Image (cartoon, rainbow over all chains, first blue to last red; front, side, top):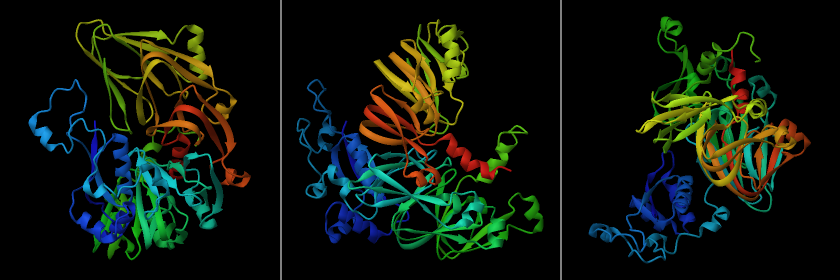
Amino acid sequence: MEYKVQVTRLADGHAEAQVQTAFAQLFRLDTDKAAKALSRLPLVIKEKLTAEQAAKYRDRLQAIGLVAEIHPMLVVAPVPSAPPPPPHEVQSATAPGLQLEPIAAPIAKEAVPEVASRPAMRSPGMAFKIEGRPDFAFLTVTIPANETLKVEASAMATMDSHMTMTTKMRGGLGRLLTGESIFVNEFTAQEAPGDIGIAPAAPGDLAHVYLNGDVIYLQNAAFVACAGDVNLETKWQGLVKGFFSGESLFLIRASGQGDLWFNSYGGIIELDLDGDYVVDTGNIVAFTEGLEYRMSKVGGYKSLFFSGEGLVCRFSGKGKVWIQTRAVEAFASWAHQFRPAKGKG
Amino acid sequence: MKSVIKGGDAFAFVEIELEKDEAVIAESDAMSSMAADLDVQARLNGGFFAAILRRFLVGETLFVNYFSNNTVGTKRLTLVQATPGSVRCLELKRETFYLQPGAFLACTEGVTVGVKFAGFVSWIAREGLFKTVVSGTGKVWYGAYGALLERDLDGETIVDTSHLVAYSPGISLKLQLAGGIFSSFFGGEGLVTRVTGKGKIVIQTRSLSGLVSWLNPKLP
């Protein structure tokens, strides 16, 4: 079976210009050509790939913010015993069945670099893939030689053996109060590129953002990993917001340039906001800087106590917010009723 | 025999269609539904002492259930595991594979299930002092908490303790500190396993200790 990889559209949340630049770098095109190619979506990137190769192309394209699909090709396999192909299939095939040398699609002919050189390539951000979505998403990042990835404490699950780890304090002692680790581990790929597999603690999904001078606020437990150049700070939310939000008193402020990954409990939904929007406090994962938010009641005082919603977070302005489809407090209180009265804790 | 794994990564289950005279051996609490005319026999898990060994060494059940189809038609059986998580099927062709304690779910008749001393390294690495050995020819279903990812290994890699679910016999485990002394204790990684050799490893994308550390601070 052979496959082709087709770009269908831009992934949500990626600036067109940025994707074009990344696409140009990836296929070593000039920016104009890349822009032209991307203006004609859907676009077949490469044909006659094995399933594995196709998946690699798709992952690379997804990493730069393009939605790619893998389609089986209608070429009849060049096996002598195979029955003669029906006429319409021969027409749709790009090459006669016996030609084993792959014929590249026009754009890919001189453009697509060999797969073996992938790890060294510098498209914006690091190459990564996410498996096990959406229930138990698992992140694998290829760290370029001598670069560093910051990872949430105790989230590393696998890594290449030449990777070194150092532990840094993050966010000051305030985080001790929140039950989060105050440490973050830095993994460096010594001399050669290396892979690291990261498993967040909570069951749920992962999201990726490439920061280009932007600022994103993360709910305290959502941080998974970021490139070495991204700055992480812990921000005090203010007593009122923090206390009533039911989350922690702190937010993580991520800024600078590079990749950022964060996780959720449950699925993750990305919302573009323009105007007011209300999110239950337990469902906030992350939001972009520039959004105003304040705690408020859903309705009157009666609904405050009886609606089961309590206080909510009211966002206003223009930006993005990521929400999770489950809240940990709700799970904890549901699970708690089944625990033995004197559990081990 | 046809078998399909359904239910996604979170709540995977195995659906098996047994033809005439086919049989499946499953852990004693694995059956969730079955055709009413399948025959079920509880058997000691491979002899009295072997069963007791398995019960205490690798946490398998003392008894296993033997589901056989003595009718003429095709009969359905669905199997589940206790933990939320993924299930995988392993096709053995006169091969051997090692499973983490508790991962074994079911197998077909041509498969022998045994227990082997895994070594103190494996024990300290929280993969169990003993391991389940499956060998022979046939299908083996196993599962764990989290999604399961298969990796081909040729050389060495590092896996955090309690993430390794299964591995082939050509692979050996060694313990080491994750970083320096300071990092290993404060970075939350502690000890890691250096996995070397040539073969297949299967890792789980979540760990129970991760779940506990995430949930415990939130419990009332």
